[in-house]
Length: 214
Image (tube, rainbow, N blue to C red; front, side, top):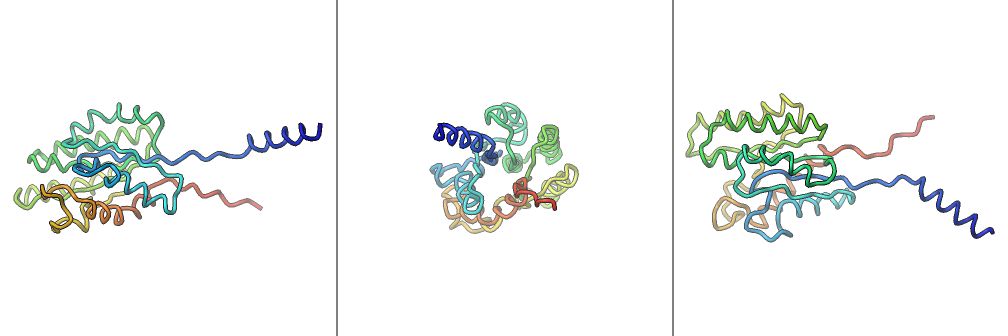
């Protein structure tokens, strides 16, 4: 009889104990996010997850990068991509625009697409870390100014944090790129991850237990 009582109490206590679900980050972007040319274990989502788990063991990073995607293509797949996660993510890292720039597409059109993406994520009450990109010098100073200005403008409009440049610490150093000169190699990815981790941590919801009230 006593054994049965103890088992019953243990079951009640176990059921009452709060179970914290993992925090889910969706890295939504293009080939830079997808880890183009690298094994999955060396790509941005996997390496970011590993770095975050050193202090946040409950974090999972899902890869939402598609090589070649423009901002318009990203906008078109946003809704079904979110459905595919099976649950609302705690944070979406939005990294798009590089392919628009490489194709010389209008920065105004890119900004409209990103604006619609951020609007939809806000409507769903999903936190966002917006990641910026820089324009190639050969596109000219007017294009560069228009392209690079849209990221801080969008961050202000939607009240989301901005990580100014995905390739910070890597751009300009060919030893950190693959043979195509556009996609970072494993060493480059590790530098990107090391630099962006503080911004990702800040953007994630705070899961600290509230202080007890006296």
